[in-house]
Image 1 (cartoon, one colour):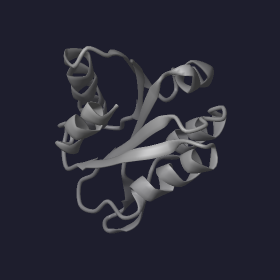
Image 2: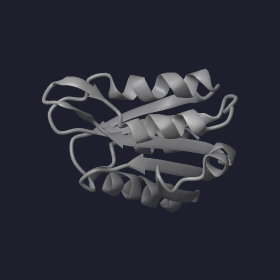
Image 3: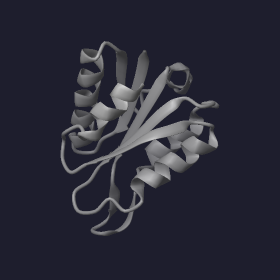
Image 4: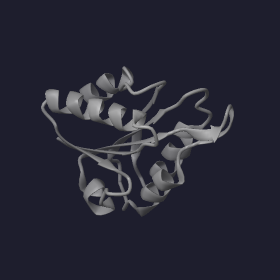
Length: 136
């Protein structure tokens, strides 16, 4: 299966988590690309068999949490996803708020089947990612 992982990272934590997820996907026998939202090609990502999109959580301490504008802009550029297995993930420092929901909602509007929502406090892949991989 071809999996596209796309992320936005400010300090490198989200990038590290995305790269760990890609390593796990490859170890499970999948082809996997890992690309920053500013370099990712929306058409190529839309064509993947499964998609995972991540963002660092921006906000003011514990209020106004959400994904970055670049992440939401990228999601907006994706084509119709018609039932494609999709996951969202976020890294955070203090609070996550509704960051995952704010990414999942526009993906669902494009027809994606959002089957995973992962959070990580730090640069590591969320433990739930393994279960998502196993279900693909």
